Length: 196
Length: 196
DNA sequence: GTCTATACCACGATAGAC
DNA sequence: GTCTATCGTGGTATAGAC
Image 1 (tube, rainbow over the protein chains, first blue to last red):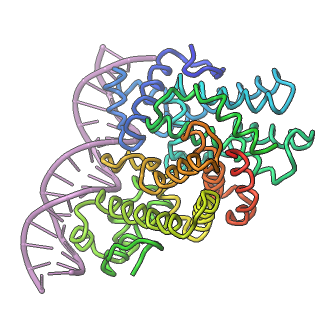
Image 2 (spheres, rainbow over the protein chains, first blue to last red):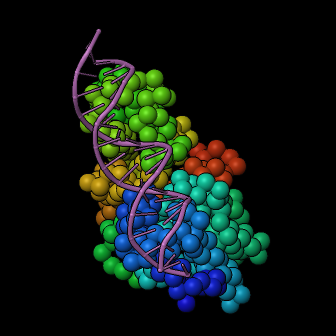
Image 3 (cartoon, chains in turn blue, yellow, purple, red):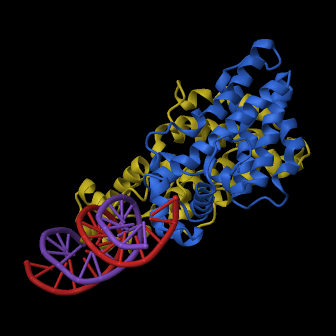
């Protein structure tokens, strides 16, 4: 069973139940406003069981985070493989992000929003995580082939993906009036124009 | 005295001391990892004094947030007044954001990053706050005068400002190798190109 | 206005029966 | 593996002297 499309980790049903409940509560109220008792009540799994599967509360967040980030990174690998040009790769990446934000807003919120440093002190910042590094690598490759014009690679990366990510933030904050994935064509037109 | 350039609120020295200490701790460790005892120790102000000036811990965060957001909104008003074209206004807004991120990273981090909903349940999301609404209004006006090409106003807004905001996120996460304000010209070139 | 001392409670985590 | 009961800590907030 999978909690998140793309993830490969095999988890027992019990773990899945705990993690999906935690994801729901963490995104609704925040990590620190969610007690282990809340998870216990909401998932109807005893405290003892929770501590059987996870070392502690932080361990739950850690497992959740790894699961989601791994899933995203795997999909980015697929996108890389299935597309030939930088244009198509980057467009597919944005399409994926928008669709994911739409179909799994909580997963997206946990990845993009949660201040992981505050409860996962050993994690690097999300912008340096595998999926985001992958995206930056796509842009860099595109500059080498000439598809993207010469400039600082970081500037190119934030210019190409920044608009879409910002749009997803607005979506997660509930201030968009249309479903976020409907914006794909328009946002992509702007993004690609910015770097070519 | 002022905690943040642009803010007009008159605060006593004691309040300022408490707020600036709180800002430091909140951004370093996060709101929930900072106890009132920590603020007391760090600012060398007694618990009693803190509760004399602020209703509770949330009140500290609320005062800080209002102070910073008001300051930003005031500067955005100035920018509107001092510039005539949409091009100049939006460029000045981005310049301001980058410089602010550089000179007051903690203030910027508290505004952009903190999951306010988790500890300020009555605040609207930051993207709907006054300064950000102002920026969106600039873009909308620019589309009416024809400076910016016709499209969904939200898409135009995120395309114009999304790259810079993303860049600031990278800066705050410490993954930029140059000071963020040095990127102004390059990021602006991309941003403006995206919407014209 | 400023301080110290303390009440009170919620939470994370464990022990140990089944 | 699953559960309930409970412990200890540490946090917010208040009381009340100066």
